[in-house]
Image (tube, rainbow, N blue to C red; front, side, top):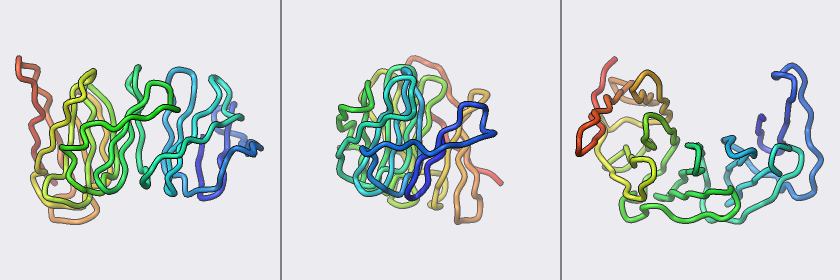
Length: 193
């Protein structure tokens, strides 16, 4: 699926051909991210909207009114988790019913992206004092920590046992974490390059 400012497009042939689903439920928005899990797509965007597709069919969508401008969404096998501006973070098991997660820990940062990997959810922010938030899968205990530099962190990904984030400003615009599996698990953040 590809989301644009006013449209959604779907492909069933590996991205060679695209079509725009006609669905009167879709309200035009600035769509910014989409995740797939549990047989459905869930899209987030500005204008306080989220949409969830009918299971296994990306042609029929259900709108969900939520406050905030949602910027990123991920799925871990049981939960959709999304981040937004003004310190918002939400989770859902079905993409329709959403709940606030760990709001006390998020400050009022403008969270840019969230990802899942290695048993952790990790999100990065472009502003605020502490620009990283993480949680262990299956827990609603979110921990907010300072980044090694006060950069505008815009993107985060997981692979090979490490999270890597990139920023749009600052001297070192790449940071990475090593996940250490000890009784008190934590994310160790370093920066470089």
